[in-house]
Image (cartoon, rainbow over all chains, first blue to last red):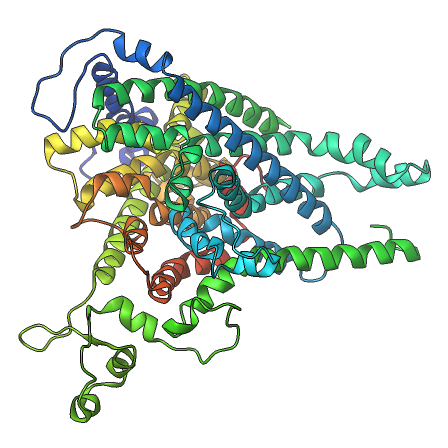
Length: 296
Length: 319
């Protein structure tokens, strides 16, 4: 403060708006640069070395060798393929269950508010803890899922062919409510008079759905899909806790193992960069849609 | 829907209601199951067919909070009579509670991890929401060069997979001694939540009419006074909602906590799964730990139900 007497007329201006703006914005930007951008630059340096955090040996510059080795490693591509499969299965499942539930909820249903709130509970829980208790539910000998579905001692998590789907089912359980919530917002924004007009024109339910409901909900549904795609791409906790099958080793798990179990620090930094570029590409699409919907 | 319903429409509605109820029940079943397991005696936790009706017990919670040893011989009648009621329940499970030399009950690792979770989640929430509110106001009320790019930058920090950031953070923390400390996690979670807090708070502050502050400025308030006395109270609901979202994120975070902590500052999410280990896990104790951990989030979800949509979509969509 420049003024000594805060009650004086001069003090009514206080700090200039520019100074206040800078005071409010700059610390946050600096904080994010120091704790997000700086680490990434730091690791960019390491990605060109053979550094191992577990040994005292100094880092040697190896140029693009890490990147070349990673891009030529069929197992890394397998990890990406597993991630892609996981993203497709779980996001498709979430859209079907979430949008379906939203369609059902979008009528005069008693206790609608309470039911919606209850349905939201799964997505507020910790992925790690959810993974843990789904392990109990999936247990082949005493799990409630096999008992309810009459599957006997069906193996969910220790069966390599099934494990990825088991993780995706848990993810669908957790995140369908998210798609439902966004779809519900989209559905409730569709003007009622469009349906009335369609009813007068004796339009069938299919025509009404594909010509009125879906096009109007599509932008919000698209946001939900992009958001979930991004999150599913990052998956770590759920798959890591639920099972340790090679068929569920998504890219985050591969990265974690490379960095903190095999201690190939340099190479894992390079892999992190490859992942980073992919995420930034998806983020760009996401933000574009976000702005588009905001403008509506 | 139309005021006059045909018979087929009413039938359709009834089918929809039934379907929604069934879906809700399916979605809640896992949560019900973990909760009920937390109140079961150990021998009923893994029975087939599953036990639905049972006498609820709190012994899983006693076991969760205390260190126990296997009882080789049954307690003497005197020992049994002298023990408090909660300790007797553990006797009945063939275990006894370990005491220190001075006779104090030895606690298990759980209370400590639960406290760590509270410390880290609350502190990082306060920091993220505090800074986020200031920054959101700055973006909402003043002209900022390259505003869209800066906001995109802020958002993008949240989009990175945690493991990607964790590798260099681990090396940096090791260099400065922040590994396995509360502050280490607090800083990370603050950075993580800050982007979210800015975006959400900007949405709330944008909705407060500028005229309120302008009127205050005319009345002789400084910008700062107007911010604290007009904007903050108007944005209180938004601040509360943002805070709860940040708290839940920090409370639930797993990957950073797994990588950055191992004992002193470990939070509950990496701790609870590590207790399953090998051999025969006591699922009632794990369920009890999980139940206590989920409880705050369940309460907050209920309180927050009207803000959920905004929070989950970075404020892009309002109800």
